[in-house]
Amino acid sequence: MKVNAKLNNLRIAPRKSKLVADLIKGLDVLEALDQLDVHVKRTSPHMKKLLLSAIANSENNFGLDKNNLYVYDARVGAGPTMKRWMPKAFGRAGEILKRTSKIEIILEERVEGKNRKTKEEMEAEMKKREKERKKEQKEAEEKQSDPEKKTEGNNKIEERAKKETPNKGWAKKIFQRKSM
Image (tube, rainbow, N blue to C red; front, side):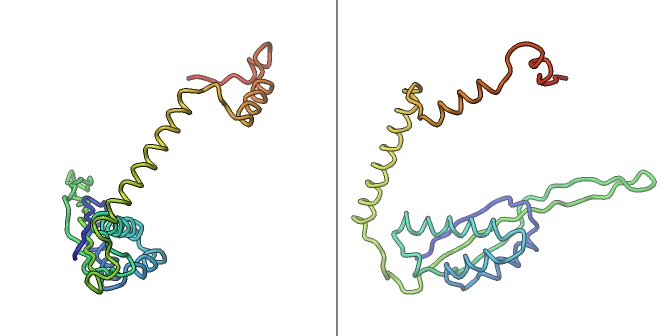
C-alpha cells in the first residue's frame, strides 16, 4: 500500500531540494530519518518533517508498521516563482526569480501486510486517544476556572516580585521605562 505526504511552496529552489530527495529514495524509513539528521543541506529539516508526516499518515490512517516501510519515491517539482526586480545601470532593471518547490514523498511496504493493524485495533486506539484528549481538556478547564488555586512556587515568585519592584519615591523615577 502506498502512502504519501505533500509539501507545497517551500521557499527553496527545486534544483537544491532534488539533491536531498535523491539521497533518501529507496531507503528504509528509519535510515532515511538518520540520513536527513546528519545531512547539511537547507532542505533537510523540511524533508524530515515531511517524512515524519508520511509515517504518521501510514500508522494512523492505514495501520501500517513503520519498520516495514521504505521511501518508494520522493518527487520534487517547481512551485510558483516570485519575480523581483534589481536596479541596474543606465535605468535598466534585472529580473530576479525566487523559486519555490513542491515536494511529495511516497512510502510503501517492503513486505505487503506485515504487522499491519486490523480495523478493530485502529478503532480501539482512536477511542483511547479520544479519552486522553477529553481528560486533558477537562484538566485544562479546571485550571482556568480555579485561578485561586496556585502552586506554592508561583506564590513565592509573586511575593519576591512585589518586594523587589520599587513602587514609590525616587526609585520609581530612576527605573521607569522610557517611552518614545
